[in-house]
Amino acid sequence: MQIQNYIDGQWVEVEGKKLAVINPANGQQLAQVPLSTAVEVDMAAKAAKRAQKAWANVPAPKRADYLYEIAFHLKQKKEQLATLLTKEMGKVLEEALGEVQEAIDMAFYMAGEGRRLFGETVPSELSHKFAMSVRTPVGVAGIITPWNFPIAIASWKAFPALVTGNTVVWKPSNETPLIAYEMTKIFNEVGLPAGVINVVFGAGSTVGTAMIEHPDIQIISFTGSNETGSKVAELGGKLLKKVSLELGGKNAVIVMDDADIELAVEGILWSAFGTAGQRCTACSRVIVHKDIKESIVARLREEMKKLTIGNGLDSANKIGPVINKSALEKINKYVQIGKQEGATLLEGGHILSEPPFDQGYYFEPTLFVDVEPHMIIAQEEIFGPVISLIEVSSLEEAIEVNNGVVFGLSSSIFSKDVNTIFKAQHLLDTGIVYVNAGTTGAEIHLPFGGTKGTGNGHRDSGQAALDVYTEWKSVYVDYSGKLQRAQIDV
Image 1 (cartoon, rainbow, N blue to C red):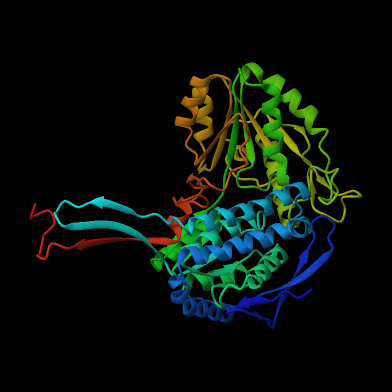
Image 2: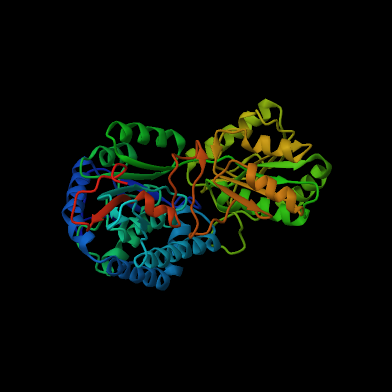
């Protein structure tokens, strides 16, 4: 299968190099993705710029109608899209269905914003004068999305951009271009005007850089690694562009001594090993009160042994492959570092290379204990199915350990004490806090994002996403018939 770019309402064949798209479960080639250049980015950006003014003049409720149509198309194709997502990315089918549902939810939610897009009216300090603020689109939005949630995160970025009157240039991940291609077909099917959304496939170093540097693209929204995000921020900052970053996490589940142990273990397992640990919100650390440490460890080990690993299309499997060989090697490197640092490896810790795993990229669910907060495995994002368990003696120590990393995305606490819960949600320094649930499972109508090294203060999802893709305009209407000077003629 040959994947094409989508520029100015047309499918565009790209000459030159192409990259194989591989099913991580079995190594089979699914398609070839084109490696576009700055030339294709220029075509897309210019098309988006040409379309933007007319699109912004479409009433917001009418722009929203397109999102409703997209939602219905996604709903109709949910099973088909989820199956493709599992083949391309590796996550188990149940999770893939959930991800497509997230895109459906986001389409409906942002369509609703087409009749809101609230500004403010405020009293003026002067008589016969009216004061208000309104949202205006930024212009052309460049969105760069990752492979781990290729359709959900695209919906987080594209849908608020569209409903607020921006046009879009989208660079999907080379690891998961097929789901992006199918989503682009839906954009075409619903009749979005030519140039409103443009899709350019290719390498981040080429296409992504060209997008950031292009003068017709006013905002860049990027989700990915901290290393790449820093480069995006640096280049975008030099050009005084609006840049929205959602980066890594080193998320922790805190389990206090009064916690429901069974519920906590269930939450840890889902957060740590769902999507094979390849979520920015994945539980990478478990911070456990010393009085229940042994109970938690025993139950975790017992339940980890029951986890089934394999192709995500088999409903019997709970954990699929990691995305590629490079990811496999990175996870294994961190496991070796953990052993060298003196942590105790209790479960897992191996690449699965014997049949039936020999054709794919599989890593065992892994548990380290005797982990100190300063260790590398407790500080750096592994992005795989690896838990580091850290023992603490109090809530205060647990919060200090949780906050003692450079990231600030998601945290969780299990406790039955309302005072403990409220103290924790106040002091935990992450953008997302869960109580008696794991670190994953954000809902689309609240802001998604984090503090510190997790980003630069912007948020995906919820009404907060509208701020990324709009500028505030303050409007003063003086109907007094005379010149009135604010702060002077009062």
